[in-house]
Length: 333
Image 1 (tube, one colour):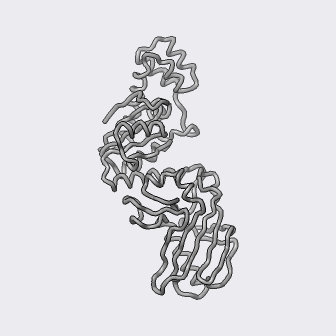
Image 2 (cartoon, rainbow, N blue to C red):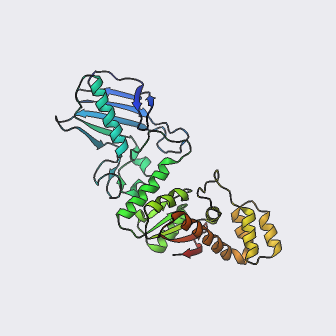
Image 3 (tube, one colour):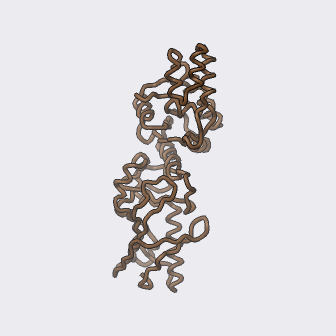
């Protein structure tokens, strides 16, 4: 807008330091402003926005108005308290806003101009459809995706956006005054707990495999009551002390489960058959009449691990749900 040209690739100074460069996929200049876009490359991080076109548009604003932000197509608007943004604000988080302001002011200074008065509109074509696959609606972000980020760099395989959504979900639930929330490893267990307690959507945390990230955040920002819900295999990992339940990070301890069966009074032949299995679901089937007792034993152990991680006053219930959505065990609060 000041020079009539687009630097391509464009160099951006990241919040954590260092420079990143991006080739432009879109560059348009008009009498009122300019638009530039890049294609999102999520690298190794699982991210539904991988390959999406992200567009930033700037338009001149009234003198003295400073730098403002607008949610364009595919970017959501905040409708619920508890997030780092006020209700009715575009879902462009504080760190990205600070980065955008810094780069605009620096670019103006390089061109010999004062700090600019512009409105910045962020647009993600198709972002409203992509947002349906995220937790945004549950967080009260309606109409599209969120512009996130704190450092400008995602650690490979970190699933940073998922963990971020877990934390924001807890913040929203606390801001809404909810005393009871539920964190589930999957949709089946989530639906079972929500039916049981009638919890609102913003009281449900899609925890996935990140039980550690959930519990550690709750340790700093506690709620009165927490229900942890999941399948037998996932919660068997938690019972063994694992806080990342992904198959790449932890394994079910088959020998330990077989040993618990023996402690519950299973016949030696059943215990040996359990030791020879390859998965927790098989052990549960082999358990026969001790199936529910085994599930309860695992639930109690998982609860103890959760309580030790929380180190606080949150009451914890652990619920193990089968693939049909029925409860195998419920222990605790």
